[in-house]
Image (cartoon, rainbow, N blue to C red; front, side):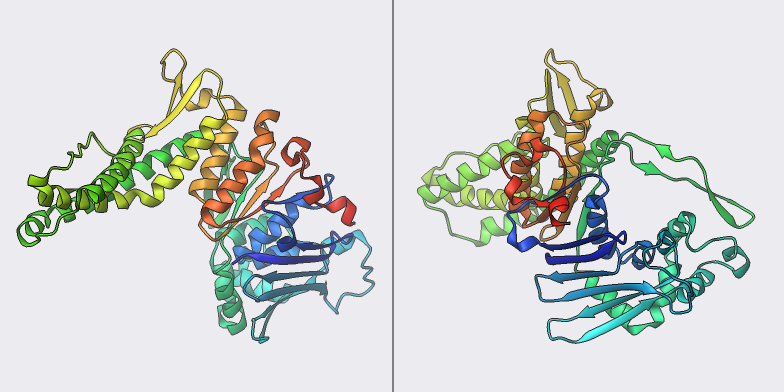
Length: 432
Protein backbone atom coordinates (compact mmCIF):
# COMPACT_ATOMS: atom_id res chain seq x y z
CA UNK A 1 0.00 0.00 0.00
CA UNK A 2 1.50 3.31 -1.15
CA UNK A 3 0.64 6.96 -0.49
CA UNK A 4 -0.87 9.10 -3.26
CA UNK A 5 -1.64 12.30 -1.37
CA UNK A 6 -0.66 13.64 2.06
CA UNK A 7 -2.40 16.78 3.37
CA UNK A 8 -1.34 18.44 6.63
CA UNK A 9 -3.01 21.52 8.07
CA UNK A 10 -1.56 23.70 10.82
CA UNK A 11 1.44 21.52 11.64
CA UNK A 12 3.01 23.07 14.77
CA UNK A 13 0.05 25.50 14.51
CA UNK A 14 1.81 27.08 11.52
CA UNK A 15 2.44 25.03 8.38
CA UNK A 16 0.05 23.77 5.69
CA UNK A 17 1.19 21.20 3.13
CA UNK A 18 -0.56 19.37 0.29
CA UNK A 19 1.85 16.74 -1.03
CA UNK A 20 0.80 14.79 -4.14
CA UNK A 21 3.48 12.14 -4.20
CA UNK A 22 2.15 10.51 -7.36
CA UNK A 23 2.85 13.76 -9.30
CA UNK A 24 6.60 13.57 -8.63
CA UNK A 25 9.38 11.42 -9.98
CA UNK A 26 10.63 8.62 -7.71
CA UNK A 27 12.39 8.92 -5.32
CA UNK A 28 10.20 11.68 -3.90
CA UNK A 29 12.36 14.47 -2.43
CA UNK A 30 11.27 16.74 0.43
CA UNK A 31 13.51 19.71 1.16
CA UNK A 32 13.33 22.91 3.19
CA UNK A 33 14.96 24.82 6.00
CA UNK A 34 15.32 23.29 9.45
CA UNK A 35 12.15 23.67 11.50
CA UNK A 36 9.70 23.31 8.62
CA UNK A 37 8.87 19.70 9.48
CA UNK A 38 10.80 17.46 7.03
CA UNK A 39 11.54 14.82 9.65
CA UNK A 40 8.06 15.19 11.19
CA UNK A 41 6.41 14.42 7.84
CA UNK A 42 8.40 11.18 7.63
CA UNK A 43 7.62 10.40 11.27
CA UNK A 44 3.87 10.90 10.68
CA UNK A 45 3.94 8.19 8.01
CA UNK A 46 6.05 5.85 10.15
CA UNK A 47 3.97 6.30 13.33
CA UNK A 48 0.75 5.69 11.43
CA UNK A 49 2.14 2.43 10.03
CA UNK A 50 3.02 1.39 13.60
CA UNK A 51 -0.51 2.25 14.77
CA UNK A 52 1.01 4.62 17.33
CA UNK A 53 -2.15 6.70 17.72
CA UNK A 54 -0.92 8.43 20.87
CA UNK A 55 1.81 10.11 18.82
CA UNK A 56 -0.87 12.16 17.05
CA UNK A 57 -2.39 13.19 20.39
CA UNK A 58 0.98 14.77 21.25
CA UNK A 59 1.61 16.32 17.84
CA UNK A 60 0.39 19.92 17.31
CA UNK A 61 -1.73 19.99 14.13
CA UNK A 62 -5.32 20.49 13.01
CA UNK A 63 -5.81 17.92 10.28
CA UNK A 64 -3.95 15.16 8.46
CA UNK A 65 -5.51 13.43 5.45
CA UNK A 66 -3.82 10.53 3.67
CA UNK A 67 -5.08 8.99 0.42
CA UNK A 68 -3.61 5.60 -0.49
CA UNK A 69 -3.20 4.06 -3.92
CA UNK A 70 -5.98 1.52 -3.25
CA UNK A 71 -8.56 4.29 -2.75
CA UNK A 72 -8.57 4.06 1.05
CA UNK A 73 -8.34 7.27 3.08
CA UNK A 74 -7.27 7.98 6.65
CA UNK A 75 -8.39 11.32 8.08
CA UNK A 76 -7.01 12.51 11.42
CA UNK A 77 -8.59 15.53 13.08
CA UNK A 78 -7.20 17.22 16.20
CA UNK A 79 -9.12 19.79 18.25
CA UNK A 80 -9.25 21.06 21.81
CA UNK A 81 -11.49 19.44 24.37
CA UNK A 82 -14.66 21.49 24.84
CA UNK A 83 -14.18 21.54 28.62
CA UNK A 84 -11.16 23.81 28.30
CA UNK A 85 -11.95 27.45 29.00
CA UNK A 86 -9.90 30.47 28.01
CA UNK A 87 -8.32 28.51 25.18
CA UNK A 88 -6.45 30.45 22.49
CA UNK A 89 -5.51 28.34 19.47
CA UNK A 90 -2.50 30.60 18.79
CA UNK A 91 -1.13 30.27 22.32
CA UNK A 92 1.93 28.09 22.96
CA UNK A 93 -0.16 26.23 25.53
CA UNK A 94 -1.85 24.56 22.59
CA UNK A 95 1.12 22.21 22.42
CA UNK A 96 0.01 20.42 25.59
CA UNK A 97 -3.66 21.36 25.98
CA UNK A 98 -5.99 18.35 26.36
CA UNK A 99 -7.44 17.57 22.99
CA UNK A 100 -9.59 15.12 21.07
CA UNK A 101 -7.98 13.33 18.14
CA UNK A 102 -10.35 11.58 15.76
CA UNK A 103 -9.17 8.87 13.37
CA UNK A 104 -11.48 8.09 10.46
CA UNK A 105 -10.98 5.30 7.94
CA UNK A 106 -12.84 5.79 4.67
CA UNK A 107 -12.85 2.65 2.51
CA UNK A 108 -12.81 2.71 -1.28
CA UNK A 109 -16.56 1.98 -1.07
CA UNK A 110 -17.06 5.14 0.98
CA UNK A 111 -17.80 3.39 4.29
CA UNK A 112 -16.46 5.29 7.33
CA UNK A 113 -15.12 3.94 10.62
CA UNK A 114 -14.20 6.40 13.39
CA UNK A 115 -12.15 6.04 16.57
CA UNK A 116 -11.59 8.84 19.09
CA UNK A 117 -8.65 9.39 21.42
CA UNK A 118 -9.00 11.85 24.30
CA UNK A 119 -7.44 12.45 27.70
CA UNK A 120 -10.05 10.39 29.55
CA UNK A 121 -9.43 7.38 27.33
CA UNK A 122 -5.67 7.81 27.66
CA UNK A 123 -5.90 7.79 31.46
CA UNK A 124 -8.11 4.69 31.37
CA UNK A 125 -5.59 2.98 29.08
CA UNK A 126 -2.78 3.97 31.47
CA UNK A 127 -4.64 2.41 34.39
CA UNK A 128 -5.10 -0.71 32.29
CA UNK A 129 -1.37 -0.69 31.52
CA UNK A 130 -0.25 -0.21 35.13
CA UNK A 131 -1.73 -0.50 38.58
CA UNK A 132 -3.66 2.62 39.60
CA UNK A 133 -1.15 3.78 42.15
CA UNK A 134 1.73 3.38 39.74
CA UNK A 135 -0.06 5.17 36.92
CA UNK A 136 -0.53 8.23 39.09
CA UNK A 137 3.23 8.84 38.98
CA UNK A 138 3.05 9.62 35.27
CA UNK A 139 2.07 12.85 33.58
CA UNK A 140 0.28 11.73 30.41
CA UNK A 141 1.80 14.71 28.56
CA UNK A 142 5.36 13.70 29.48
CA UNK A 143 7.90 12.07 27.19
CA UNK A 144 8.43 9.39 29.83
CA UNK A 145 4.81 8.34 29.69
CA UNK A 146 4.87 8.25 25.88
CA UNK A 147 7.97 6.03 25.89
CA UNK A 148 6.20 3.58 28.18
CA UNK A 149 3.19 3.36 25.86
CA UNK A 150 5.54 2.31 23.06
CA UNK A 151 7.03 -0.46 25.21
CA UNK A 152 3.89 -1.78 26.87
CA UNK A 153 1.41 -3.31 24.42
CA UNK A 154 -1.24 -3.33 27.12
CA UNK A 155 -1.77 0.39 26.50
CA UNK A 156 -3.30 -0.25 23.08
CA UNK A 157 -4.91 -3.52 24.11
CA UNK A 158 -7.20 -1.39 26.25
CA UNK A 159 -8.80 -0.03 23.08
CA UNK A 160 -9.46 -3.53 21.76
CA UNK A 161 -13.09 -3.33 22.87
CA UNK A 162 -13.65 -0.64 20.23
CA UNK A 163 -14.59 -2.34 16.96
CA UNK A 164 -13.66 0.68 14.82
CA UNK A 165 -10.23 0.84 16.48
CA UNK A 166 -9.69 -2.78 15.47
CA UNK A 167 -10.85 -2.17 11.88
CA UNK A 168 -8.55 0.84 11.46
CA UNK A 169 -5.65 -1.15 12.96
CA UNK A 170 -6.30 -4.03 10.55
CA UNK A 171 -6.26 -1.67 7.57
CA UNK A 172 -2.95 -0.18 8.71
CA UNK A 173 -1.41 -3.66 8.75
CA UNK A 174 -1.11 -3.21 4.99
CA UNK A 175 1.01 -0.07 5.40
CA UNK A 176 4.59 -1.36 5.47
CA UNK A 177 7.11 1.38 6.22
CA UNK A 178 10.86 1.42 6.94
CA UNK A 179 12.33 4.63 8.35
CA UNK A 180 16.09 5.16 8.09
CA UNK A 181 16.78 7.98 10.51
CA UNK A 182 19.56 10.55 10.47
CA UNK A 183 21.20 8.76 13.43
CA UNK A 184 22.49 5.52 11.89
CA UNK A 185 25.81 4.58 13.44
CA UNK A 186 24.86 4.22 17.12
CA UNK A 187 21.37 2.86 17.75
CA UNK A 188 20.25 3.48 21.32
CA UNK A 189 19.38 0.38 23.31
CA UNK A 190 17.75 1.12 26.65
CA UNK A 191 18.19 -1.25 29.55
CA UNK A 192 15.29 -1.21 31.94
CA UNK A 193 15.62 -1.80 35.67
CA UNK A 194 12.77 -2.22 38.14
CA UNK A 195 12.61 -0.77 41.64
CA UNK A 196 9.54 -1.34 43.81
CA UNK A 197 7.49 -2.33 40.75
CA UNK A 198 8.31 0.99 39.09
CA UNK A 199 10.35 0.89 35.86
CA UNK A 200 13.30 3.23 35.49
CA UNK A 201 15.65 3.32 32.53
CA UNK A 202 19.39 3.30 33.03
CA UNK A 203 21.81 5.12 30.74
CA UNK A 204 21.49 4.05 27.08
CA UNK A 205 23.89 1.43 25.80
CA UNK A 206 25.54 2.54 22.56
CA UNK A 207 26.80 -0.17 20.22
CA UNK A 208 28.20 0.45 16.75
CA UNK A 209 25.57 -0.23 14.11
CA UNK A 210 28.23 -1.40 11.65
CA UNK A 211 29.06 -4.36 13.95
CA UNK A 212 25.37 -5.22 14.15
CA UNK A 213 25.12 -5.13 10.35
CA UNK A 214 28.09 -7.47 10.04
CA UNK A 215 26.40 -9.94 12.42
CA UNK A 216 23.11 -9.65 10.53
CA UNK A 217 24.81 -10.39 7.21
CA UNK A 218 26.51 -13.41 8.79
CA UNK A 219 23.19 -14.70 10.17
CA UNK A 220 21.44 -14.05 6.88
CA UNK A 221 24.00 -15.99 4.84
CA UNK A 222 24.07 -18.82 7.41
CA UNK A 223 20.27 -19.08 7.27
CA UNK A 224 20.15 -19.08 3.48
CA UNK A 225 22.92 -21.68 3.30
CA UNK A 226 21.02 -23.90 5.73
CA UNK A 227 17.86 -23.59 3.61
CA UNK A 228 19.87 -24.57 0.55
CA UNK A 229 21.28 -27.63 2.32
CA UNK A 230 17.80 -28.73 3.40
CA UNK A 231 16.44 -28.27 -0.13
CA UNK A 232 19.41 -30.16 -1.55
CA UNK A 233 18.86 -33.08 0.81
CA UNK A 234 15.19 -33.27 -0.17
CA UNK A 235 15.98 -33.24 -3.91
CA UNK A 236 18.87 -35.70 -3.58
CA UNK A 237 16.57 -38.17 -1.84
CA UNK A 238 14.50 -38.30 -5.02
CA UNK A 239 17.45 -38.43 -7.42
CA UNK A 240 17.55 -42.22 -7.82
CA UNK A 241 13.81 -42.39 -8.47
CA UNK A 242 14.19 -39.80 -11.21
CA UNK A 243 17.07 -41.65 -12.81
CA UNK A 244 15.23 -44.96 -12.79
CA UNK A 245 11.74 -43.82 -13.72
CA UNK A 246 12.26 -40.94 -16.14
CA UNK A 247 13.54 -41.29 -19.66
CA UNK A 248 13.48 -37.69 -20.80
CA UNK A 249 16.60 -35.72 -21.67
CA UNK A 250 17.49 -32.18 -22.70
CA UNK A 251 18.80 -31.70 -26.21
CA UNK A 252 22.34 -30.37 -26.56
CA UNK A 253 21.28 -26.75 -27.14
CA UNK A 254 18.87 -26.65 -24.18
CA UNK A 255 21.44 -28.35 -21.99
CA UNK A 256 24.07 -25.78 -22.95
CA UNK A 257 21.79 -22.83 -22.17
CA UNK A 258 20.79 -24.22 -18.78
CA UNK A 259 24.40 -25.14 -18.00
CA UNK A 260 25.53 -21.57 -18.68
CA UNK A 261 22.80 -20.12 -16.43
CA UNK A 262 23.52 -22.56 -13.61
CA UNK A 263 27.30 -22.06 -13.88
CA UNK A 264 26.89 -18.28 -13.71
CA UNK A 265 24.67 -18.56 -10.65
CA UNK A 266 27.18 -20.89 -8.98
CA UNK A 267 29.97 -18.37 -9.61
CA UNK A 268 27.88 -15.57 -8.08
CA UNK A 269 27.01 -17.68 -5.04
CA UNK A 270 30.62 -18.78 -4.52
CA UNK A 271 31.66 -15.12 -4.27
CA UNK A 272 29.41 -14.86 -1.21
CA UNK A 273 30.52 -18.19 0.28
CA UNK A 274 27.12 -19.81 -0.23
CA UNK A 275 28.22 -22.83 -2.32
CA UNK A 276 31.43 -24.75 -2.85
CA UNK A 277 33.14 -25.78 -6.07
CA UNK A 278 30.28 -27.41 -7.99
CA UNK A 279 31.29 -28.96 -11.33
CA UNK A 280 28.77 -29.11 -14.19
CA UNK A 281 29.88 -31.65 -16.79
CA UNK A 282 29.65 -30.89 -20.51
CA UNK A 283 26.93 -32.51 -22.62
CA UNK A 284 27.49 -36.01 -24.03
CA UNK A 285 24.93 -37.98 -25.99
CA UNK A 286 25.77 -41.21 -24.18
CA UNK A 287 24.92 -39.74 -20.76
CA UNK A 288 22.30 -37.17 -21.72
CA UNK A 289 19.61 -38.57 -19.41
CA UNK A 290 21.83 -38.66 -16.30
CA UNK A 291 23.32 -35.25 -17.05
CA UNK A 292 19.91 -33.71 -17.70
CA UNK A 293 18.42 -35.01 -14.45
CA UNK A 294 21.46 -33.83 -12.48
CA UNK A 295 21.44 -30.36 -14.09
CA UNK A 296 17.70 -29.91 -13.59
CA UNK A 297 18.04 -30.91 -9.95
CA UNK A 298 20.95 -28.51 -9.44
CA UNK A 299 18.95 -25.69 -11.02
CA UNK A 300 16.05 -26.45 -8.68
CA UNK A 301 18.34 -26.42 -5.63
CA UNK A 302 19.92 -23.10 -6.56
CA UNK A 303 16.50 -21.44 -6.93
CA UNK A 304 16.46 -21.41 -3.12
CA UNK A 305 18.90 -18.49 -3.36
CA UNK A 306 17.11 -16.49 -6.07
CA UNK A 307 15.61 -13.79 -3.85
CA UNK A 308 18.63 -13.25 -1.62
CA UNK A 309 21.09 -13.46 -4.54
CA UNK A 310 19.49 -10.51 -6.34
CA UNK A 311 19.73 -8.43 -3.16
CA UNK A 312 23.34 -9.48 -2.49
CA UNK A 313 24.38 -8.57 -6.04
CA UNK A 314 22.65 -5.19 -5.79
CA UNK A 315 24.28 -4.53 -2.41
CA UNK A 316 27.69 -5.59 -3.71
CA UNK A 317 27.39 -3.50 -6.88
CA UNK A 318 26.49 -0.38 -4.91
CA UNK A 319 29.22 -0.87 -2.32
CA UNK A 320 31.83 -1.38 -5.04
CA UNK A 321 30.61 1.69 -6.94
CA UNK A 322 31.58 3.83 -3.95
CA UNK A 323 35.23 2.80 -4.32
CA UNK A 324 36.36 2.81 -0.71
CA UNK A 325 39.97 4.01 -0.56
CA UNK A 326 42.51 1.15 -0.29
CA UNK A 327 39.83 -1.27 0.93
CA UNK A 328 37.81 -4.14 -0.50
CA UNK A 329 34.49 -5.35 0.92
CA UNK A 330 33.16 -8.91 0.67
CA UNK A 331 30.76 -11.13 2.63
CA UNK A 332 30.58 -14.74 3.77
CA UNK A 333 28.65 -16.90 6.29
CA UNK A 334 31.70 -17.27 8.54
CA UNK A 335 32.51 -13.60 9.19
CA UNK A 336 29.69 -11.48 7.79
CA UNK A 337 31.42 -8.35 6.50
CA UNK A 338 34.97 -9.05 5.34
CA UNK A 339 37.10 -5.93 4.93
CA UNK A 340 40.64 -6.10 3.56
CA UNK A 341 43.19 -3.39 3.03
CA UNK A 342 44.98 -3.04 -0.32
CA UNK A 343 47.92 -5.06 1.07
CA UNK A 344 45.66 -7.99 2.03
CA UNK A 345 45.29 -7.37 5.77
CA UNK A 346 41.93 -7.87 7.49
CA UNK A 347 40.41 -4.70 8.91
CA UNK A 348 37.84 -4.52 11.70
CA UNK A 349 34.62 -2.94 10.46
CA UNK A 350 34.73 -0.37 13.28
CA UNK A 351 37.96 1.00 11.81
CA UNK A 352 36.11 2.24 8.74
CA UNK A 353 35.48 5.98 8.50
CA UNK A 354 32.10 7.31 9.65
CA UNK A 355 31.17 7.96 6.02
CA UNK A 356 32.03 4.40 4.98
CA UNK A 357 30.09 2.99 7.92
CA UNK A 358 27.12 5.20 7.09
CA UNK A 359 27.00 3.97 3.50
CA UNK A 360 27.23 0.28 4.43
CA UNK A 361 24.62 0.59 7.20
CA UNK A 362 22.24 2.61 5.06
CA UNK A 363 22.53 0.36 1.99
CA UNK A 364 22.11 -2.77 4.11
CA UNK A 365 18.90 -1.46 5.67
CA UNK A 366 17.52 -0.25 2.35
CA UNK A 367 18.19 -3.49 0.47
CA UNK A 368 17.72 -6.22 3.09
CA UNK A 369 15.29 -4.76 5.63
CA UNK A 370 12.81 -3.02 3.32
CA UNK A 371 9.96 -5.28 2.20
CA UNK A 372 8.95 -5.35 -1.44
CA UNK A 373 5.90 -3.22 -2.32
CA UNK A 374 6.42 -1.03 0.74
CA UNK A 375 7.48 2.51 1.65
CA UNK A 376 11.06 3.57 2.44
CA UNK A 377 11.67 6.83 4.30
CA UNK A 378 15.21 8.25 4.45
CA UNK A 379 16.08 11.24 6.62
CA UNK A 380 19.15 13.35 5.83
CA UNK A 381 21.14 10.72 3.90
CA UNK A 382 23.94 13.25 3.37
CA UNK A 383 25.20 12.94 6.96
CA UNK A 384 28.90 11.94 6.98
CA UNK A 385 28.89 11.25 3.23
CA UNK A 386 31.45 12.67 0.85
CA UNK A 387 29.94 14.86 -1.88
CA UNK A 388 30.95 12.30 -4.53
CA UNK A 389 28.83 9.68 -2.76
CA UNK A 390 26.00 12.15 -2.26
CA UNK A 391 25.92 12.69 -6.03
CA UNK A 392 25.23 8.97 -6.54
CA UNK A 393 22.58 8.66 -3.86
CA UNK A 394 19.38 9.27 -5.84
CA UNK A 395 20.51 6.95 -8.63
CA UNK A 396 21.04 4.22 -6.05
CA UNK A 397 17.61 4.95 -4.59
CA UNK A 398 16.05 4.58 -8.03
CA UNK A 399 17.68 1.15 -8.45
CA UNK A 400 16.50 0.01 -5.03
CA UNK A 401 12.97 1.30 -5.65
CA UNK A 402 12.64 -0.45 -9.02
CA UNK A 403 14.17 -3.67 -7.68
CA UNK A 404 11.44 -4.09 -5.05
CA UNK A 405 8.63 -1.81 -6.28
CA UNK A 406 9.28 0.48 -3.31
CA UNK A 407 7.98 4.00 -2.77
CA UNK A 408 10.96 6.08 -1.61
CA UNK A 409 10.65 9.40 0.22
CA UNK A 410 13.88 11.30 0.97
CA UNK A 411 14.13 14.33 3.27
CA UNK A 412 17.26 16.40 2.60
CA UNK A 413 18.65 19.89 2.17
CA UNK A 414 21.85 18.80 0.44
CA UNK A 415 22.45 20.36 -3.01
CA UNK A 416 24.70 17.39 -3.83
CA UNK A 417 21.96 14.88 -3.07
CA UNK A 418 19.39 16.81 -5.11
CA UNK A 419 21.77 17.53 -8.00
CA UNK A 420 19.86 18.66 -11.09
CA UNK A 421 16.46 17.70 -9.65
CA UNK A 422 15.59 20.95 -7.85
CA UNK A 423 12.48 21.42 -9.97
CA UNK A 424 11.30 17.94 -8.96
CA UNK A 425 11.58 18.61 -5.20
CA UNK A 426 8.76 19.44 -2.82
CA UNK A 427 10.19 22.51 -1.10
CA UNK A 428 8.42 23.12 2.21
CA UNK A 429 9.58 26.74 2.30
CA UNK A 430 8.10 27.52 -1.13
CA UNK A 431 4.83 25.77 -0.33
CA UNK A 432 4.45 27.68 2.91
